[in-house]
Image (cartoon, rainbow, N blue to C red):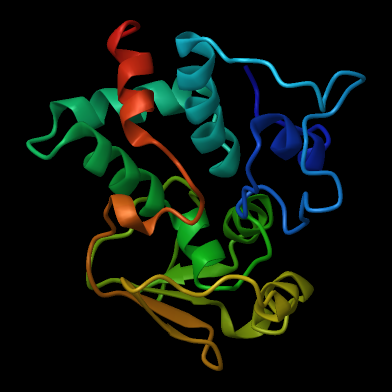
Length: 203
């Protein structure tokens, strides 16, 4: 399955959560699932609950099912708890760090900045959105693109704060990873254990 390119608010309403990496828009005007029966209560099966948590992560970070599966496999091989490692690997993605630092309104916008070669890591250009930034590395926007409309729009978004593991200098358009993220770093409600259970039957 390719990356989701459809209506973003609609999918957030279906999942019952706002995904800041997917869209800067809110669901507060219609906080119920879309469709004719959106406001009718219905009980979700255990499978549906697990699938929903997996979809939250996949859509927020802009991943394909194959990419998320690969990351989950790596997380399970880690010495850390699989859920903790999964969130760490997702949060360390370069496109996510550009977004969490406030240099783009969404992760798709951050990914575009990266692929167009506007992002540096420790002064060297990196154009791979999935690059995993390590603790101690500094991510910055190229000097010629510091006032790029994507960056300016990102800095104007006021509903998200940079996480504690990022030291952000907005004026210099720089963000330094001071420590590795953990499961508390994710910027929306998530039950990581349900994702682990979803993949336990499929890996």
